[in-house]
Amino acid sequence: MEKTEEKQKRNKLVIICSKGSLDMAYPPLMLATTAAAMGMEVDLYFTFWGMNMISKKTIDSMKISPVGNAALPIPNILGMIPGMTSMMTSMMQKKMQKIKMPSIREMIATAKESGVRFHACSNTMEIMGFKKEDLIPEVDDVIGAATYLDMASEDAITLFV
Amino acid sequence: MEKTEEKQKRNKLVIICSKGSLDMAYPPLMLATTAAAMGMEVDLYFTFWGMNMISKKTIDSMKISPVGNAALPIPNILGMIPGMTSMMTSMMQKKMQKIKMPSIREMIATAKESGVRFHACSNTMEIMGFKKEDLIPEVDDVIGAATYLDMASEDAITLFV
Amino acid sequence: MEKTEEKQKRNKLVIICSKGSLDMAYPPLMLATTAAAMGMEVDLYFTFWGMNMISKKTIDSMKISPVGNAALPIPNILGMIPGMTSMMTSMMQKKMQKIKMPSIREMIATAKESGVRFHACSNTMEIMGFKKEDLIPEVDDVIGAATYLDMASEDAITLFV
Image (cartoon, rainbow over all chains, first blue to last red):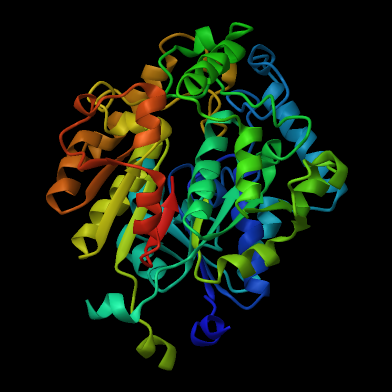
């Protein structure tokens, strides 16, 4: 009781998004939109394959991979058949649509409207040859690791996805 | 010194378990059982492929994938041969048994006895078509992202596995 | 305003490194060296496939896998062709060299010089049959999950990569 009184709840969420597959794009966006709806400050920092989520070229074509994912119930040899990746992806998309789950682009728009901030990693931009105009307009800025650390050290809930 | 005196140590661990492979099931469970043994409060939140860890159907058959894992010393073309996934998995299981590492089911039972709480993600249940009775009895409840954020904001050590 | 005054910024970063691929080795090392340069205390805890980053045998030959990575723009069937993994890896290495990005070995040396501490997971050592002499000299010690939790509970920014 005393502990609760002397300690404030954390009111900030800072997530590093480093994955480029559809299944790992949903968790940070779901957490971000929920946190923003609860009145929390939210910052998303996109790095490495996470750039797929904020690049104009890839945002609408993110995929689930049917190989190398031990959680999927198909043997790897079947996953190799051309067309399997898009079949798995469209299967998941259908399930998502059935429960009216918004697309990645829609979730990003909702997040942006609720005040979530989008940051692209400057190092990744350089390594992968991205320019600011390759990114969706929701991206607020291009920042380095030092700026991320500044945000994360403000007593935020920190996650690396 | 002053800093140590004015600041209490964090006594809570909240982990999101999002992976469905055997190798990524061990780290959160090892941390959870150790933290509980140290007297910490522990909450595990299972989402996406992490449902494999708490689903009756999959808990005993989690696998390591030999493809798409750059850390394993076999070329991808060999990983494609049918039977390779189960060979790699049983190799790891043998190593685990040799040092008397408990199975996922045993670790979950131990964690539960030490007070670790198990939460299933409501959104994932809907997307993947899971019902409460498909989950192992150790699962305490089905919760949404808002409840997770509430737990995580209580000054917990937060991790996304 | 008041909140900022009563609350100190966190000055510690504790990262679990659990992945063995080149692309997931860079993020923790970039964060670690940046944090150390900013005067933060940094601890890296290597577990599971993350041992690849601190093992003498594997530190110089970490790879990007072209299969099972939905973020890469090649179909899985092509990823299967022998030589594809090393082709993808050398493509990324060339891009890295072009922007003068140091190698994993160089980044670890820099991190060590700036005071970053390197810890190997005792359980992983046992499971995978590693001995202390198999590890690079930069490794400070071999510790268990309890010691990691002690470090993480000191109000650190915590990440699981």
